[in-house]
Length: 344
Ligand SMILES: [Zn+2]
Image 1 (cartoon, rainbow, N blue to C red):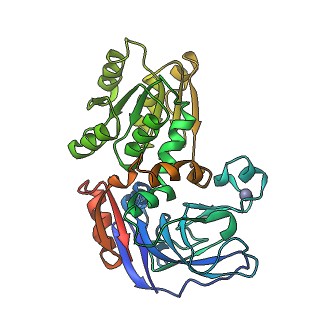
Image 2 (cartoon, rainbow, N blue to C red):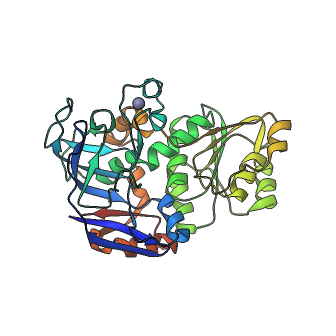
Image 3 (tube, rainbow, N blue to C red):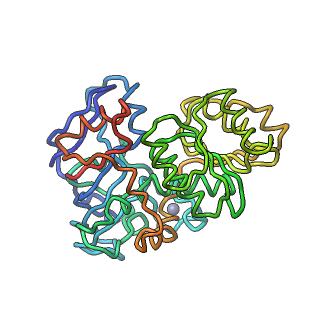
């Protein structure tokens, strides 16, 4: 089968690899009908050391179940499923708590352990706990929005949950990538009254406004902090949704939270330590977040997509075939595309 392999920074190739197969009785094999390139794929695209074996990329997909292992009970061949970016058994203590990204038998796609989904097919461990059957057909018009349940919409929602967004709250979203844009949708959906987006790309800002952002802060650093305070009677916001993961964005996130506020972090941190420990302490700011348990959120978010209340699929501004995936990485890295969907 054909699959996307990254060999080092800037070196993405589509190659013939061994077919995905059922190797554990709890596995399923999914024929991928839609996959995506994620903002988090751009970190290795910028920095990965060259390796001989490469890394099979991709952790967001929708597809059709092609084969199931002997112990798979809830899925059958032909089911259309969405695949969260992490696999999970659905039965352990953490899965029961809705924290599937900490599953005792879980892990992540697109790693050394489990090859990725920017491919014709993907092996899905713990298939019963991981995959969610969708009540639509393979070519449904809602496919772009549905595939965001794999990661970006669930991740934006997690930022909002971690930042304690609720009715009447003031919110700031740091970052205008696909996750930041979905975080705007999530904040509005949870009843936020004021939603400030921090970002500077005109196309993304325009979409953020359509999704519900009420104000835009284009400045960075201290100037951004000052602007957010001006927009919030000098206080800062109740909830900050940090969707970048760089030192500067984490610092800004803490500095724009009002005393007693909360920061929900979903940008993969690029540093070992977290900045702004003292302002966070003196202002009693809760800092929470991490890899989103998107599996836990599908049930809640799906009806809003099916009934047209939210349209997170609008973050996709380019659709490519599998053979063009390398150009998709380049386009996202050059900020030519917000988010790329791959149709194998
Ligand atoms: Zn589990």
